[in-house]
Image: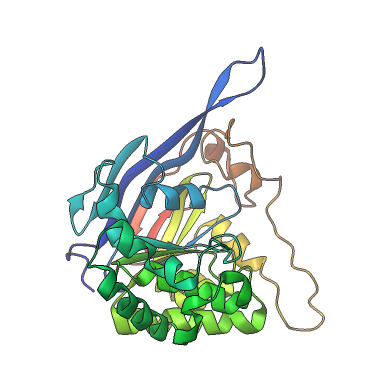
Length: 319
């Protein structure tokens, strides 16, 4: 898809700052959970967002869902800027699939009630049409009609995640945010859910933002990958390029940390130096420099330049 076309979802310099108390006599500090993130997602793409826990991925997802307002920056859907009071509009166009189907579904509601809830909240159609829409979407995600009157506790983990997908798709959104959609499932079920997401994307023309720690899942599903570190995007490129020729040292370290099935190789060395830095007191210059094996004196003194070229985007003094 051409870069000149209007992206279905665009983030422009999104910031989200929290004020954190440090103790009775220590005052308060600002925590920059999301720090100047800009992304463009074209219709039909799958953008994989990866990074360690605490890097800001989930905060960014909550901002996109309208659950948290950004401190500054703009979110555009189909080229139109969304305002915080337009939560209903955002909810119609962006829907989530959460990682834990055990806690994201109300155990006291039937599957039919859970899946039809968005229709009732947004007053789409009437009660005479809701059942037909629910049956149609259940069929799309591979569930029989008989589960309409079942409760989440009567279903398997894979079936519950299919219900979560059905609830997200009942409004026919443009973008689906998948936050670790397979992490709580058995390995045998994970492949089924991934294949379901792939087929739904093809059949319904969906666009995904895939948040995951599992790089194998990202490689399998994503068309582009963005790597996040301490609230910033440090590298973004097409999936094949990221996995074959990563440029940022953090991306290289993440890929090298993946366990391999090859015998005799043992547990990989992370090559990440010191532990994850304190986000309340981030390092100067390039925030990754204390953990970087390629760090130079200038890395600790000034922020790295941003480079965008035919290979993608990277922010690093090496380029």
